[in-house]
Picture 1 (cartoon, rainbow, N blue to C red):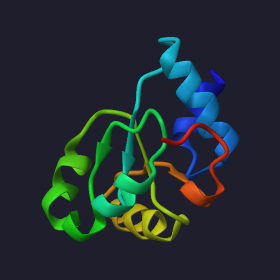
Picture 2 (cartoon, rainbow, N blue to C red; picture 1 turned 45 degrees about the horizontal axis):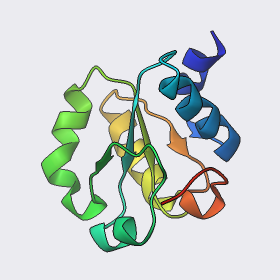
Picture 3 (tube, rainbow, N blue to C red; picture 1 turned 135 degrees about the horizontal axis):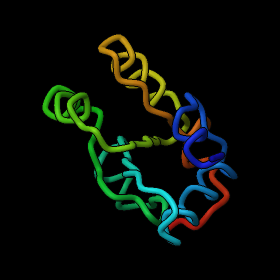
Length: 112
């Protein structure tokens, strides 16, 4: 199924994330959308459907939970820079997760 394929990609476009969020709303797929920006950034604006805020500055505290999780996870930040760094570290430890390529600044879906 195309939806599962999207969860295996390294980079997701705005349109792909929107498609996944809609499918999740319809019960067709399960994943957690995680914002790894700082709390003040999240409070200013975040993607509707975001499940959790895990600031990059606290990476050491939450990285183990992410590595041990069996859930499908997608991460995003402001421009994709922080997520690509986190993605690279997780990949070194055997955990591949997709990220929103150009971050929330390029996201064309609903933001609150």
